[in-house]
Every structure is written in C-alpha cells, then in structure tokens.
Length: 203
View 1 (cartoon, helix red, strand yellow):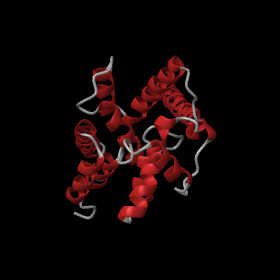
View 2 (cartoon, one colour):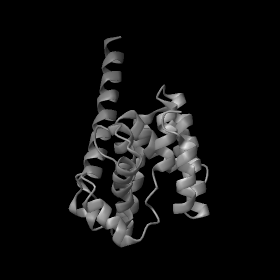
View 3 (cartoon, one colour):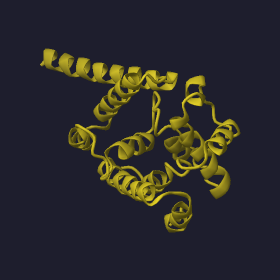
C-alpha cells in the first residue's frame, strides 16, 4: 500500500498508551467505513485516521515546539489551549518524519480537533471518525453515528455545535477557524433548505 500503515502502527505503539493506540485503530477503521460510504479514498482515510493522534501523548514542551516550528498557521487561541497542540504538531511530524506531502492528509490531521470552513471530504471524515469511533461513549454518540452515515454536511454542523457547547461549558477558548466552520456549515444547511423549499414551491 502507498502509505504503509502497518509500518506506522509499529511507531504508534512506541509513542502511545495502549488505550490511545486502540483509539487510533478504531478511528482509522471508522474513517475507512465513512470513506467507502461516501466514495472517498479508503486508503488515505485509514492512514489519516490512524495517525491523527500521533503527538497526543508527547510532553507538553515538545508538542508546543512542534506547533511553533510546524510551518502551519495557528491562532492565539490554539496556542493557548494545550489540548489542541497535538493536531498541529502531528501534521508537521507526519510530513517531516514520514515524508507525507499530501496536503489533504496533513490538513485532515491538523484540523481534526478544531475544524474549519470549507473542509475537504477527507477532513470531514477524519473529524467525524474521531468523534464516532467505536470507543466513544458520550451522550448522544449513537445519534451522531447515525447522522454521520446519512449526511456529512449535517453531521459536521451537529459536530461543531457539540464541540462549541463543550468548550463554552468548560470556559475554554474557541479558535476563529471553529467559529468560521460553524458558520460555513450553518449557511450550507440554510442554502440547502432554501433550495429544497424553492423547488417545492415551483412544483
């Protein structure tokens, strides 16, 4: 296979706890299923899902340094939120250590926690795959799973709502790209509803 996930699994086992490694496998499997459902590249989806948390358990100082030197643009809110570092750091590490230059894979890893406006289908799949993987057990996860396989756009809007509510409840900071993502998918749903209503009116 082009991306050789089996070789990367060995690296992940050395970097992650057993629980985090199992989560990575679950996310990769979920991403593959979503990609198959929506006609996307299953190999790329599995690979991106597998590596999405590659930097999750690195020491804080190393994660922060990787973020700063990643070459990816990041916001003040992201730099001030430790739980968001691993995504940016991970994208940089996957590029530099494994020579992965596919920007779609890198963006899928980089934005799997915060999201953004205009995400590619692969980015959406990894974002949602992380949210609905087999090990997730939060309230309403079954609803989210069902929605994800019905409509990626609707599921993304629901996911942004879930994420923003969770952050607000904890008193955290919301990155601008997350707000822009919420607005993007809200407009998308409004446009789709307007289009549907318009067609019904003509008929």
